[in-house]
Image (cartoon, rainbow, N blue to C red):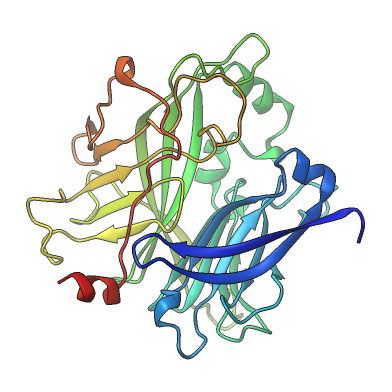
Length: 336
């Protein structure tokens, strides 16, 4: 179509120098010129280098509406849409996915929207995805009350957010050992100009975290699943969470993974939030971005530096923003 622009996509491993082709992404030309149709986040269910049986899935959300789609890397000819585009009975408010994560033990994709709605999908059949369950924001009053970024919250919250100096971002983390799904809520202090927009002349900085476990249990005779939100108070059961702008949120257990002395238990290791990081092609003159990195001790609510200083006087723009690297088992074997 004349009004569409095709973007060729591929995955590239800078360590093995291998690349895997992905289906092209077609977006309207006017959005492409403004940089509005590009992928926001892309994850893999398993290493494509080890995918001999076609089980690897690439999942992304893209564009201003954060639409969800998936494919089989190196095999699919097109992206397959997944999930809803808009909320029911609320006009054309985009569903807008905020984070996605894949569990190997559950063989399930978990998704979260900006309104703190949650979904779980079975993608084993590449042509027939199955929704395992859906958990809406109003099913969890604690999230509904705390989430002022949701477009459904009304004008009152929108006005409060405009004058606020804090933003709230959420991440999904799944612990494969215990089959537990967590939501990490991150509070970031920012500076806004007179027009209400983010002022990049002042560095933003993370100031706190809260972690909740989402529990979904089989239902009773009516088939309705039981849903519960449980706050993690004081510790993370010895786990360490890794979150950031790109890729999976993941868990390390220092006492079980031979990371003693290198990774501290009950801590959250974080890199910059993709919502605040200036785009690489941005022409704005900014002095920061990619700098919000550190370690948060969940037991005593203290911060420490991680490779880069946390004091705002030392903040500078990092382009591209740092991200966590999780090597595959085949790569570890090759360098052992």
